[in-house]
Image 1 (tube, rainbow, N blue to C red):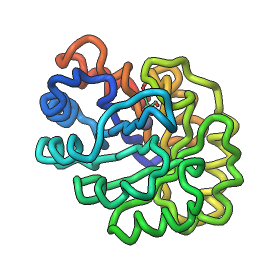
Image 2 (cartoon, rainbow, N blue to C red):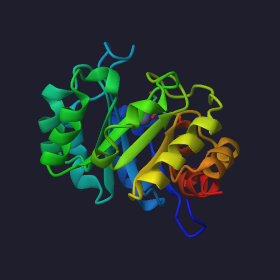
Image 3 (spheres, rainbow, N blue to C red):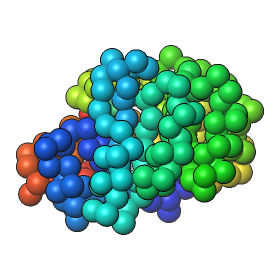
Length: 220
Ligand code: DX5
Ligand code: ZN
């Protein structure tokens, strides 16, 4: 990113109190979150089950911020429309979760939403090569997806490679990083070219009165 590009923080509500998600969304909105990151897991693509489109729809009135919906479900295609209708602004999918990934990205765009591509730690960046014109966000996973609170996997070289591909494309594509992000690892991923940081544990620790300081600490 250029020096003037702002860093955006996307708190993951996976780390919030699931009995009070609306309150959590309002609290992180007020605390300065840029995106609201929603981790959708199906117990099949990843070994955990979280929330579905009805919950996204219920949360939508609680914030005007960008709803950044990260689908860790397979197959993803049958649910794209539901998440779009529920109020997602960005829908991010994993190439392993769709046999015709190019078409899935077209579908998301066709629903009027921004399309994201998520790279698992072992997924090569080459998967981007034929779809750069169809992606608005590239998510580099720095943990294996499924759970919050895992240790950051150092993938700065991969983040740099993705940043290079974005520069070559000439397009304005978000480079998001997700997993084990805290003030220390944030510095590393920002230096490598990330401009959107997902953080669950690092934002939701210490209670609501700490959220603003926790978010500010991630901006570097
Ligand atoms: C992992 C999720 C992440 C996770 C981040 O599968 O995609 O969004 O909740 O949580 P932390 O910041 O605790 O690693
Ligand atoms: Zn996520």
